[in-house]
Image 1 (cartoon, rainbow, N blue to C red):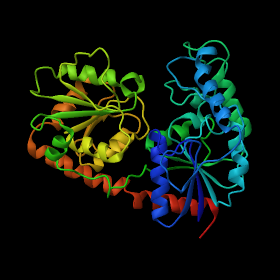
Image 2: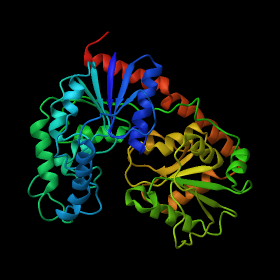
Image 3: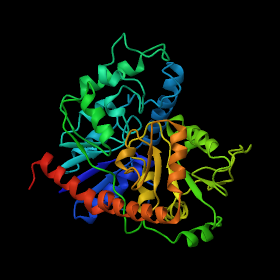
Image 4: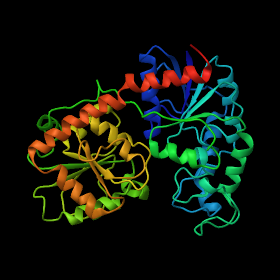
Amino acid sequence: MKVAQVSYSDIDGGAARAAYRIHHALRELGVDSKMHVVNADAGDWTVCKPDLAGVNTINSLRNFLGASSTRVLHTGNKVFHSSAILSSRWPQRLNQSGSNVIHLHWVNGEMMSIADIGKLQQPVVWTLHDMWGFCGAEHYTEDFRWRDGYLRNNRPSHESGFDLNRWTWHRKMKLWRLPMHIVTPSRWLADCVRQSAMMRNWPVSVIHNAIDTEAWRQIDKTLARRILRLPTEVPLLLFGAIFGTRAPRKGFDLLIDALDHLRGELPGLELVIVGQLAPRESMNFGFPIHYTGHLHDDVSLNLFYSAADAVIVPSRQDNLPNSGVEALACGTPVVAFNTGGLPDIVEHEKTGYLARPFDTEDLACGIRWVLDGVERRLMLSTESRQAAVARFSCPVVADKYLQLYKAVAHCE
């Protein structure tokens, strides 16, 4: 079985890291998997980056178009858009790769155009890491045009000017004539696919993202804190997201509201923010905060997850965030809202706590519950680790993908 994994990057960003882990999980299972990327940062011989004349110029132009479309076309500044206009040589490269299956990951706009995706000749498996595949140009949206169809009369009031999303959606409908097999890491996103006007008749499977549970594992909490120079005797909460404090979808403002409910209730409570440096002007959250800055290696992340008593994922919308899966692998429970793909990670009061969506008092209640007593923390830690191994470990996820590849490629 020869598979071409296609992703804009190998390890830069959550979707890229998820794709890279799937790629290596499959190689461990004996699949001839090669990863095809635009940005190769891992220094891995199994990752292929094209050496094409002018490729950097084209990529810069794609990035400029993606970044400027929301401003120029007034499509709403809260949403990241990819119109995926510029074609590339990726269809020719992939069609000539000799692969049994082409497995797409995050290719949206910055790597391949909508037309490029429609030109792929081999069986295609596409793991959606966000909503772009069945939306217009949006990667995430709280509107429902993706479900009803992008009509002239259902455009949201916060948009004006040229209807970029409707135009992009109709290009997908025209150019993607053959259904691809869609994979979603969460049940929530699979339900969205089944309800979408574009993909409701396409095959869809739910396969969680993989994590190497041999490498990601529990480290003694006291030892981890001493290595990281964190206090050893206080309750520690961890919030992790690249630029997460500035992304409304990640819900950092909701976490701050929850912490406000806890003022004076949890003596010694401190917060660790992974992925950002301390701001110039510090904010008073009512608790001491430790900023880690950007971390680029799994060992450091493993230490921080192990040092924490709970990881907080207060997202308004999320697929299957790596931070939740990584936390469980390190034996650390997760507190989140019962929305999106978070229920695929958190079993309520078993591996963490699922609060009522966007109810910050209930999120605060979940933090209290998780931190209540040594015996409960030990139980949650054990259950979290067992859940990670059973549902997200590399052999479990890789075998599901291999069976899917055989089915779509008609290989035995």
